[in-house]
Structures are given as C-alpha cells and as structure tokens.
Image 1 (cartoon, rainbow, N blue to C red):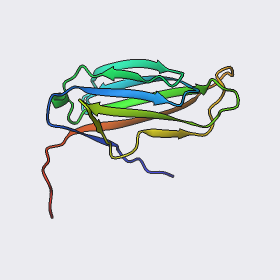
Image 2: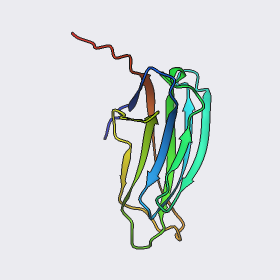
Image 3: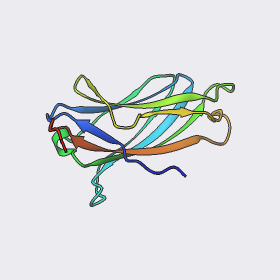
Length: 143
C-alpha cells in the first residue's frame, strides 16, 4: 500500500500574480474541478472548473494574492477521455507559475495515464491530487 506524501509548492515572497495551467496531450479531452481552501477551517477561498481539448491549455489566474496563500491547500479532481479510439495512453499536466517563473512542487504535477477510455464510451479515467503553498523565505535550516 502506497503511503500518502503531501506535495508542497514554494512561492516567492512577492505579490507577483500566480497562475495555473492545465495541459494535456492533443487527443485528451479533460475536465477539472479545482478548490483552494484553508486546511484548518476547510473554508473554500477560490473554486473553479475548466475543460481542455485539442492540446490547448486552460490558464487560471488566482484572485488571492500570493502573500496570502501560505499554508493554503489546492486540491483537484480531473476526469479525461480520448478523442481517438486507438489512443489510450497519454499525459495530463498541471503547471504553476508566479510571474514569468515556473514553480517546481516537491512532487511532479504530470500524470501518466495508461487506461484512457474513448470519449464515445460511457466512462472516463479520473484522478485527484493536492498541494500546499508555502512561502519561500530563503532561510536555510542547519542541524
């Protein structure tokens, strides 16, 4: 049984805007539900749904300022299907950026999917994930 490891995303210490892009291979049709919330109070701060197909990314710009995101959690549920009957393996990716800088979470945001049903069938492949935003203070910890 695989243990759950939390994913963290370190933010720069500025209020330069944060954006999230949902991307997939050009034959994947996907829909996603994202929620940004306070894990202590469970209060939802932002919530949005999006869809993608034909390889065109969906880009969402956060309304909450980055300095207010520390220790907030982003969760997602993604469903997908294949627009090509003979293509059942592909990739769905989430990319987070702050200004012109791509942010690198502690665990990858690229999903390798090996059982994508055709969109004409009654079914989808689904998966979920989450990550916690942390401000990168530049402070080094030494034992």
